[in-house]
Amino acid sequence: MVKALDRKLLRDLWGLKTQVVSIALVIACGIGGFIGSLSTHGSLVWSRDNYYDTARFPHVFANAKRAPQSLAERIRAIPGVVEVETRVVRDSQLSIPGVVPPMIARLIGFDFERAPGMNRLTLRSGRWPSPGVRGEVVVNQRFLEARELKLGERPDVLLCDEPTGALDYETGKLVLEVIAKINAELGTTAMVITHNAAISGMADRVLRLGNGRIVGEEKPARKLTPSEISW
Image 1 (cartoon, rainbow, N blue to C red):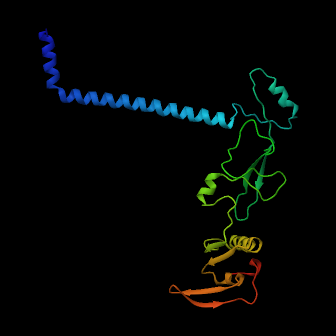
Image 2: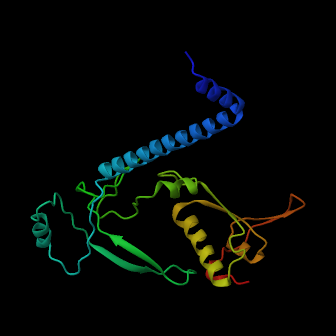
């Protein structure tokens, strides 16, 4: 049997049904957000642990100068140390024409003939570079995707749109030298679109455009090198 006080409470709740439902929805949203945060946190922790386990990511990094290889065995003998791996690391300046100040590169020794125990690289396609062989490289996947390149890809045509535009004179000459080298060594056809008429001396064939049509054509008697061109 419902008591009078209970009936009064039910009447009050019914009179405040809108507020009660609103409060219930707010509480439900809070609980849902909390559960979602816990799930996201658990997923991130699992992804991190799985990546560290697959790549054998170390727990501790330490730098040492002039350290003998025998030091690795002494560290490995410390209680709690499971694995030790040593690598040669050197910092060097990269002198790239047109880039000021010089860029700093970190060179890290990597033995491609022996599978590393820690800090493993993930090879998605292709193969590892052969030791002692020049002209082979490991490229970051995002670098390839950003430039729409593929492994082993060698384009037949190199389209250069205003290669010297917005560049200073010296940098423009360096760009022309790169284009000439690609054309000579790789046999890649270089098509240059430019308002810089001086560059035409490098071409085998020159087409002049006007109103979207070819209005002139000429073949230079002798191809000039980038060093012979000035503007």
